[in-house]
Image 1 (cartoon, rainbow, N blue to C red):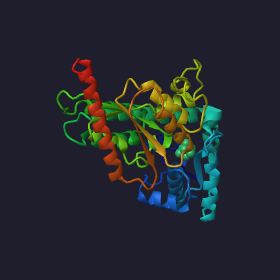
Image 2: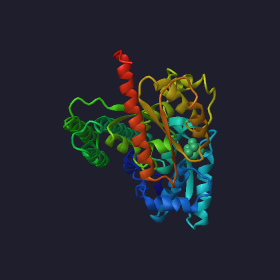
Image 3: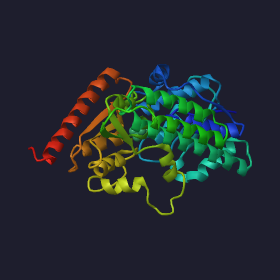
Image 4: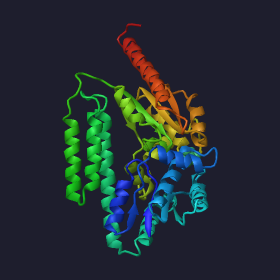
Length: 365
Ligand code: SF4
């Protein structure tokens, strides 16, 4: 059995650690690139969202590398994600690949469902070994997210453009290579330390922008044309509430206190939207309401044809909470130049808005 799964940010690293510790043959397809997208677009039904197309491209590339068991998230939510694994499996069979698609519905069976799947894929490995491997994978996930948060803070203030990104690439490789807890802790501490010690511009108070929207396009930089890196180059600090480690805490584990970030967002969104509309539509509205006073602006990432985010986009333009929102529709037609032009104009608007507020605050109306 050769197992593979589609990419979403750095998620392949914790999974690789988990499967390697259980001696499972895990194939990592090439990181998302133009060929992945072209394959996905060529074989997807018209009108599918970019997560479908890119994950299909990954699965084809994994099958080319000999993977025969493909893991794909699914579920019984409102959005069409629940159908994707079956459609993709059919497409792969039509292309002549003899693969089995394993659908993971984490929201229903939470941690128990994941562990049961791992048990099956590992050919019935002992529970102790599975739990230990799973915990190590989670540690890598947490380390990756903590380093990324440090990078987000450093990008807008670094003296030498690109220095934080360069360290980030090295940190990701070091975390990937760490083969025990001590090496992992050392890699994380070393790179967070080096990030904090980078030369900074003097007295900069960067604009703060929240990046919100659909889970996949927020977390997969190839699908959003590296929007966070581009914002950093424009001197903007990015705040993102969606990190896989955070999501894991409230989606995989039972939540005895019953309070989590999602609940807070739903509560905040309720005056405008009272129910789940699929994907992250409800959360996007809540993010705007909740963070209007904290950020200078919001970048809303929405896959083209994504119904939940279309609902959110229409509601967000009418809320009382006043904060500029730029919606970027992600698909294969989006170009970097087009996105940069819009980002530059948006950041310019946020800068003028902050200066105007400061003048009002100083009594110079
Ligand atoms: S939430 Fe939107 S983009 Fe994501 S899978 Fe569903 S329809 Fe596609």
